[in-house]
Image (cartoon, rainbow over all chains, first blue to last red; front, side, top):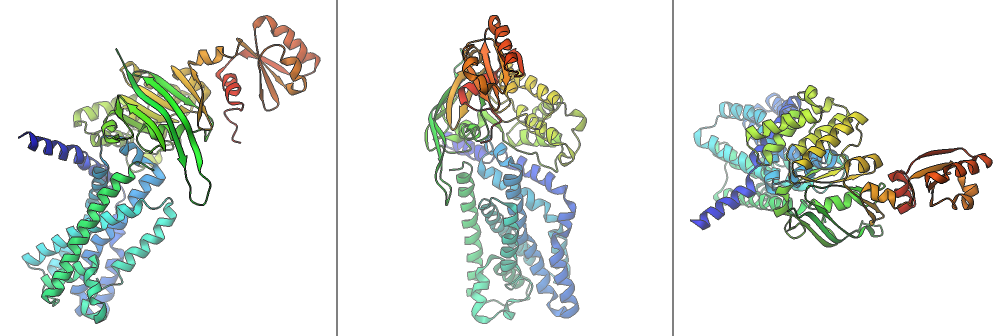
Length: 256
Length: 309
C-alpha cells in the first residue's frame, strides 16, 4: 500500500503540470491560426500535382500527406522550444519551478501537437474517404500517427537545445524535415524507390510508417519481414527518442 | 524564529568557452540571506550577479561551492528546492501570444495551483503591477516596460518562499519601478525572501535591507545601504568637476573618490565651506549633497557602476 502510494506520488510529482503547460502552449499556438492553416501547404501542393499528373498515385500521396503532417510537428516543437529558450528566456521561469523538465517537454510537445492536429484531421478524413480506409486501417493509421508524433516531438525538442541562435535553427530544420520527410517514399509508393534502398526507407520513421499505413489500407504489398522491419524500427526509434528526450530535458535544465 | 533562506559558501564558477580562455565569473562567493529579507546584489554589467543568481536558483551548475535553500542542497538535489523558488529571468519576456492575465494564470496552473487560487492571485498580481487595464491585451502589443511588469507579476503571484529577480525593473518608468518595489515589500511582509540583482543604486538603496557589492566575481562589501554609506567616513559629499588637478588638497578634507573628471570628497558639514572655497579659488565647479550609495560603490569598486570597461 505504502509502496503504491509512493509510486503514485512519484508519478504525480514528475508529471503534474504537464497538462497545464500543454494548455498554455495550446493557447499560444491557437493565436497563430494562419501558421496552423498553412502548415499543410506542401502536402496540398503535392496532392494537387499528383491529382493532375498521376491520379492513380493519389491514395499514396494522401496517406503520405497525413503522416508527413505528423512528421512536421517535430519542426514546430523544435522551433517553439528554441524560441521560448533563446528569444523569451521563459524556460528559466518554468525550470526554476515545481514543473519538472520532463513535464515541460511533454507539455510543450502535446500543446503544439494538439494545435497542429486540425489540418491533420482534415487530411486524415480525406484519406479515410478517398483511399478509402476501413476501420482497421483507420486505427492503424491513427496509431502510426501517434508513434510518428512521439518520435519527431522528441527529436525536435532534443535538437532545439543544441542551438543558440534561431537563424541557425531554421535552415537545419528545413533540411532535416525535407530530407527525411519528403525525399524518401512518403508521398509516393515504396516500390518506386530503388530496390536496394527500400530497407533503408522502411527503417526511417517517416517512410516506414507510411509503408505500414499503405499496407493496412491495402494499397501496398509488404513481406512479413518488411512489416517487422518497419514496425520494429518505428517502435524502437520512437521509444529511444522519447526516453532520450526525457533524459536530455532533465540534463539540460541546469546548464553546466 | 526564522532561519536562513539561502546560504552560499565559496561558490566558484569558471566558464570554459570553446576557442577562448576560461573565464572565472565567480571567485568564492559566500553569503547568507535570512528568511523574509530583501537583499540586493549590486554590481556593474558582467560583475557576476546573474551567474550567482542562476546558480542559487538551480539553473546553472557551479564549478565548486555549496548552496543551500531552506536547508536543502540546491546543487545535489535541485528538484527538492524548485517548489520553493520562483525566478524573473534577465531579459525574460512573456509569451507574445498570451495576455498578461493568461500568462500569470497559466504559469500558476503549471506550478500546481488550483484554478481558484490561480485566478485570485493572478488578479491581485496584475492589480499590484498596474496591469489591470491591459490584462486582456496580447503581450506582443505591450511596451517593453509593461512586458517586464508582466514577468514580475507572474512571479510575485506565486508568493514563493524565495524569489530571485534578475534586474526586475529594467526598462520600467519611475512610477512602475515604485509599484514593483511596493509589491516586493508586501511580499516580504508576507514572509517571502527576495534576492535581486540590480545596477540601479536607488533600487538597491530603497528596496533592499542588505546590499552586497560584487565586482569581477568577488563580493567586495556587504551591509545595509546606511552602513555602506557610513563607512565612507562622512555625511556630505562635495563633487568637484575637474578636481583631479587639486587632488592632494582635496584629500585633506576626507576620503576622495574619482569618477571620470570629477572628484567626490566625503567630508563633515563643518568643513564644507572651506572645501567650496578651495574649489572656487581653483575655478572649478562644485556641488554638495548627502553621501549616497554611489560614493560607497565607487570607493569599494574603484569605478562607476555605469563603467562598461
